[in-house]
Every structure is written in structure tokens, then in C-alpha cells.
Length: 587
Image (cartoon, rainbow, N blue to C red; front, side, top):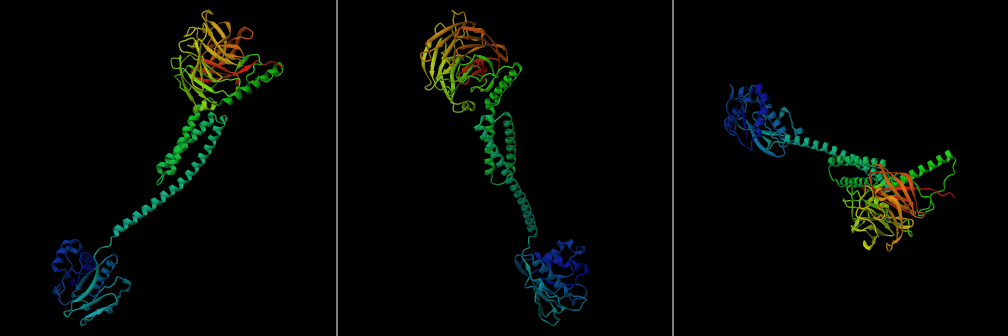
């Protein structure tokens, strides 16, 4: 119990409730405070009291004699002060979660006002039921008086005592405010992230549509080689790069499960690799488009010639594999198929397509780059279709020991090649990848004795046309002039031989069409000329002037395919095609 005596001044009375509330907050339950305690506490809070002094009232333990303060020992304190103190305690108690009890006993306070007694007991925190009626105060002769929300009593010496319920702990207002701020911040972040999720869902939907469109376009390209061009590749590459950039931004900003985003990233990466692979396969557009362009140009030229010279239209070209024509009179521009499968360093070699009169349109494709020495043939690849060759897929790679030079050819599923460091011709079975037969070519010079101009190790050059297997070479007896021999493709025996007047080292390469030998020579780094022919059926030879464009400087080998009626040229590592134009025989 705390015993309060004395009347404060007006200034002190204004400060009293707050200061006493500060003091009472630290009290344990039912702790009696002595005057010494109060003096000690008051001296430690000089700023709380006017002039650095404690209030005039004295706090003592129950039963202790009251200490006079002021001129009269019998003055009583105004009855509103205990009530105000009790109300402040009530307000303080509303913020507490756990209640403690402390007893406050107020001594008779000397005052100039009429004597009244206040006895207050707060049994509940319901402030709305508190009575403020002045009749609640007892007269000097009454022992106790009870009110709805508080009780009080006065002893025989006139000391007023009341009980007040105080909390033992203070309510953590600051912590609650911090929790409210944190909750508000979390709510804002949640709204922000939720809005991002909505945006990501929309972006993913857009990406899925783009992927579907690109998938359809690529499927069309895979089925039809005519459909893709350089422009198509550029557009696809731009779209894929844009999608790759957006998916990276999406992955960085996305919070939560990223399984769908990772899956999209993998699909875009695979698509990028596929587009790059397709792009490397056709640097100069699809072959079919080039053929159509050449055919249209030829038709246009024929129409113009017909109008100018009033000449009759020429009949259609001969059937594939037919010799019903007057020989080669023109050649198309080169069509670049691709770089050889070994790369830029392998500039020497040969390529072509197998020809068989029994199955003229079903021959396989072969590519045989020589080693970087330009002489040794060890590895070659076989493809069943042109698409496999273009895509570097389904290739069969075989090894032989050893071929020499780029004068090889494939006929009826057998490869015919000049054997290394000899004048022999070897027959290699492509099905078993074994040497089936070797045969010496009589009197043939070899090992760079009479090779072609600008190309070494092609003293013996094999060829195929509509009539079968041929070989072009030179002998010491021919003084380097070209010799043509017809071979038996089964036994490699020489069936017939023709001697020409053309010096072989002055020729860059040769090929056979319908029993006629055609020879080329270099005009400049970008142009060749078909300048010479020899007809084995008539023994006639002569000059021609058919200009051939070329991609690179040197033509390493030329092979003719009778069914397709085109040349397969190995040009400094690149695989080229030329369409031949024949002189038509009027019906």
C-alpha cells in the first residue's frame, strides 16, 4: 500500500498523475514503499518535478504516521485526486495482458477545501461502468463506502485507503507497430510478385505460340528443301535470338518454381542449334531453285532467239541416260552443294554419284577427300541420298590402303582408283569395303609423270559415261599426249584404245559423255574453258569454246553422271554441280 499525504500546488497537481503513473509502473505486486524510497526516487528524477523537487505529498507504508506538509496537520486532500489517480491506473491497465495487484493507501491530506473522503477499488477494467458521482465519497464518520467500480475505506484516524489493480507488465506498443509495418511491407511485396506472376504467365503463353509457329515452319523446311532460303534463315535467327533474350530476363526476375521457364530455355537452345545446323548446309540456296532458274533462263533465251532469227523451237532435251543429241554445247553456272566433310584444309579429292544402267536413278553419293598432301586417299564416305549428304547424316565412312590422286570414280557399286605408288587400277567393293581386284594399266605413266596442269597425282584418271568405264592417261610412247582406253568393269582389261594429239599436262581436267572426251583449261582464277573434244566413235577431235564459271581457283576433279546429265566437280574442297546443255537433233 502507498500512503499519500499533502496537497500539491496547481503546477504539481498537473504533473502528479503522470509522474505517479511512472513510479507505479515499476512496482512489484503489493510492494509497500517507505518514505525513504520515495525520497530516493524523487531525487533521481529532478526533471520530473518543478524546480527539481518532489511533490509535497509523502508516500509511506500502511500504518505509518502521517507526515505533516504545509501549515496545517489536519487539512484533507481534495477528493478528486485519488479518483484521478485511479482513472489513470485504469487507463494503464487496459493496455496490459497480465494483471498484478498493488495497494495504494492515501492518508488524509490537509487542504483548504471541505473535507471529503475517497475510497476507490477497481475490480474490473470496464471503464464505461465507472461512476463519477460526488455522492460516492464518505463522510468523516463513515468507515467505508462501495461504488460499482471501486471501493474505499477510512480508518478511525481519518486515513483514506483504496485498492487499485495495476498490471505487472507494460503493453509492447512499439513492437506491435513494427509488426504492423512489417505486415504492410510483406503485403506490398506479395502484391508486386503476384502481378509479376500474371505477367510471366502471359509471356509464357506468347512464347508457346511463337514456338509452335517456328516448329511448323521448321517441319515444312525438313520436308521440302525448296522452302528454306537465306532470308528465311535470317528471320528465324532474329526471332530465336529475341526469344532467347526474353527468356533470360524472365528467368532472372521469376520467383518460385522455374520448371516451365527452364523447359522453354532448353527448347529455345535446341532450336538455335537446329537453325545454325540447317544454315551451314546451304550457303547458296537450294539446288532445285537454282536448277529452275537456269531452266527458265534457257527457255527465255530460246524464245528470244526464236523471235530474232525466226527459227523453229528446239525439241526437248534427250531423256536421262540417252545419247540422242549432238554433244555438249553449253554448261550452267556452278551450284555449290557444300564443303567437303573434312573441312577447308582438304582441298584435293573427288566426289560424285554411283551410276548403274540397271538402276540409273538410284545410285548412292560418295565423297573422297585426299590427305592434305594432295596425293593419298585413305577415307571416303557414302550417302544413300542427297539429303543425307547435305545434313551429314547416315554416312558410312570406309578406309582403304591406299589410293592415289583424285582420278577415282564409282560404277555399279564399285570404286575404281589408281593404287598408291603404282600404275595399277584397284576395284573396291563398296558393300564390303574390300579390294576385289587390282590390274596394271599397260604402259601408263604414273607418280606425277604426266598429271594435269595445276593438279598432281592424276596420271591415271578414270571416268564413267552412258557406255561404261573409261580411263585417260599418257605414256612415254605417246610423249605425254592423252590416251583413252575403254575398260571392262569386271576384269579391268583394256577393250580398246585411242591416241589423241592433245598434250595431257596442258589440260586441267577431263570427262567423258557418250564416248566423247572433253578437256578443260584455265582462263583465269574464276573461269575455265571446255576447249577440246575427242569423239571415240569417229576418231575426230577438235576445238570448243564453252566457258565454265568456277567458285575457287582450281578444279581438282570432274565426274559425269549419265542419268542426271550433270558434272560433279571438286573445287578446292567445295562440292559443285553443273548442268550440261546438249545440241538437239531436229526430228
